[in-house]
Amino acid sequence: MRLLALLLCLTPLWAEKRHLPGGAVLPHEAYIHTISEKDSPVEQVYIKSKDGLYVAAAIRRPKGPGPFPVLLHFHGAPGGRGMEKLVTWVRGDTGGPMWERFLKEGYVVVVSDYRNPMPMMASVVDSKGATYVDDGVAVIEWLREQKYVDPQRISVYGVSLGGNLVAHLIGRTKLHAAVLGAPAVLEFLGVEGWKPGSAEGKVNEAVAKRNIAAMQCPVLLLVGTKDGLLAVDEPFHDLAVAGGKAVTMLIYENGYHDFVMGPQGHAGRAEPLLDATLAALERTVEFVKNPGVK
View 1 (tube, helix red, strand yellow):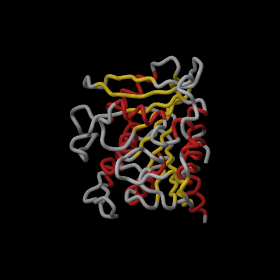
View 2 (cartoon, rainbow, N blue to C red):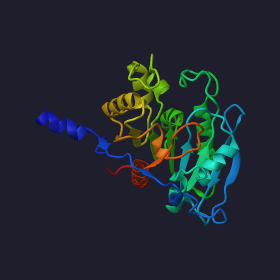
View 3 (cartoon, rainbow, N blue to C red):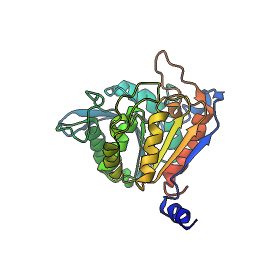
C-alpha cells in the first residue's frame, strides 16, 4: 500500500486515460461562420524555414492589439497543401468548428502548412537536412516576433501526421501546451511493421524513450475507437507517463480518424460532425487555457 501511494504521488496529476461516449451525428452549420471576416479577416503569410523554403500559414485574430494567446494547428498528411486549402480551414468553410471556437476565446488561430516528408518514416532526429519539424520551429519563431502574440502562451495542435510533427516540436522548443488529435506518431516511436487499420507494429522503445524525454509541455491526446491509430497512440501515452510526462489521453467511442476536427472537405471520405467532436473541442479549450489542471 505504501508503494502504491508513492507511485501515485510520483505520477503527474493530469496523466490519465479515460474512455468517453460519442457517436451521434450533428449538423455542422450552426458552428461555423459565426465570426465575420470583417471582424477577423484571414491573413496569408509565408514564413522562411531553416533551408530557405517558405511555409504557408493562414491566420485569424481577435480585434485589438493584443498580445493574445495562440493556437497553432498542423494538419494531417500530406504536407504541401497550399495556401488556398489553409484558408478554407481557418474560415471553417469545410465545416470544422475549432478555429472560430478559439477565436471566440480570444486566441489567434493559425493553420500552418509544412513540407511533405520524404520518405514518410525517415527519422526526423537523425536527418542531416531540414525536415517538416524545422518548418514548425520556423513558424513558432516567427509568431514569437509578432507584437500581437503573447510568446509565453503559444499552444500547438497536431492531427495525424501533424501530430508526429508536434510531438517532435515540443521537444525542440518550450511551448504552453500541446494537443494531439489521433497522432500518427509512428516515426516518433520508431514503429516497425505497422499496417493501416491493424494493431500490428512494434515500438522501438529506445527511439520512443529518447524522443519522449525531450517533450517539454503538458499534452492532451485525443483519439477515437474507430481509428486504427489507437493501437499506436496508447503506447505513446503509456511510455510518456512512465517517463514522467504530463499526458492525458481521452478515447471517444465511435470516433473516426481525426474526428476531432469534424468535416475537413476530404474527397471520398465520410466526415460527420459528431457529439464527440464538440465534446473533445470543449475539453481542448479547457486544457489549453489551464494545461496543468486535470
